[in-house]
Image 1 (tube, rainbow, N blue to C red):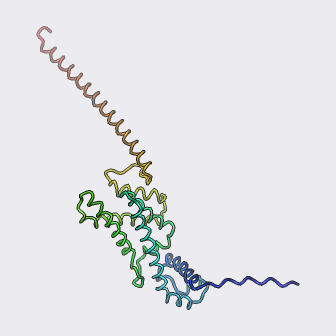
Image 2: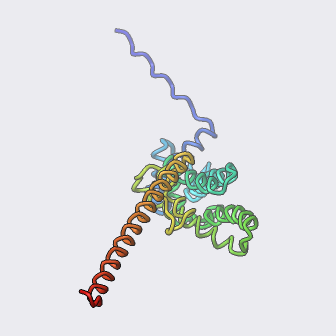
Image 3: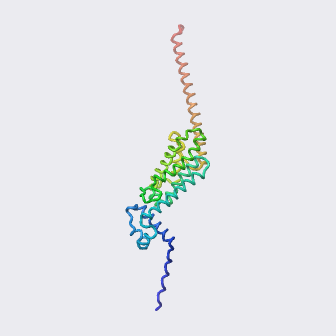
Length: 260
């Protein structure tokens, strides 16, 4: 009877690989349960290691949580900052920044859930509010330049930066759970409101400038037709009023004519 072939020995993880594994596992558990709801035992069990291994790498769950938050913080901040600097036109900057946040949420939902939670004092970067403050600082710099170019009072740039970042951030938190419509459409609608305001919303917003231009041309043609129609109706109403006026004059003249 032949003996069964020995099982291949599992490759032993390096210290760096083990650390990344613990970070991945911790990210998922923290996103689901938060820091207080997650134990070192659960992290170790999910990783297939003993508790001392977790302590060896991070000193405990707080240390692991701090590294996870720091990584997500820096990753999202880098994405948004790069997007703000990658476009020339100011509408393009806003579009890319909104899209970068939504892309991060879609591709890293666990990381975003952790950032949105109240961060604990053990983290190096702080809370989601501090992240938004960092992003608002970048936006403020961009707005100040645009305000100067347009002769607006740049003292209001910090306030407008907070408004813009707050609007995008709250929309992102809402979209984290609903995931509809798709991120490109959400970004287009956010920018529609931020760029045009309620008084001049585009009926069909898009991130594609060619589509926006075509839609604008269609709206202009419809407006021209509507204006021409209104002008024709006004002329028709004026002609009708003139005929009625003439008829009235004839009747009055008939009443006052002594030969009648």
